[in-house]
Image (tube, rainbow, N blue to C red; front, top):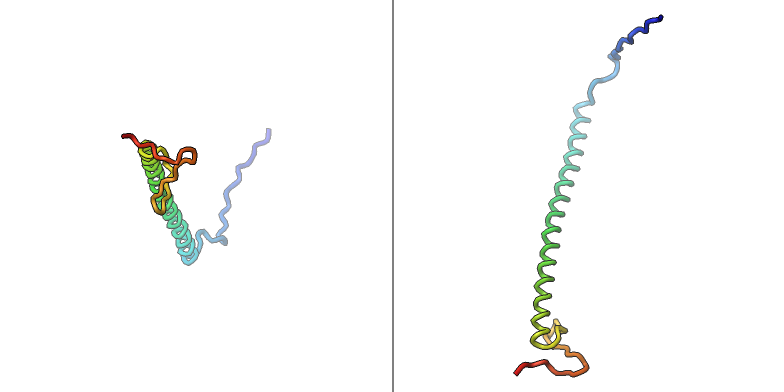
Length: 98
């Protein structure tokens, strides 16, 4: 039987162990910029999420308002510029309850 020899770890003292201080500083600055950008994106996404919820709440409110118009006027088709009610062409009259 032959015994295998353990290989000794050879340290090469001609290779540097660390990058230069200038390189380290530059790398840290670049990573800081990336981290700040990620934080800003997160902040914007959070704000976007809040705005999207606001839109949904407003749409629900608009739906309720349209239901009120439908009950009161027989239609919810209203000109948003001047408030004119656009009645259906079949009768042209409001469904008023006396």
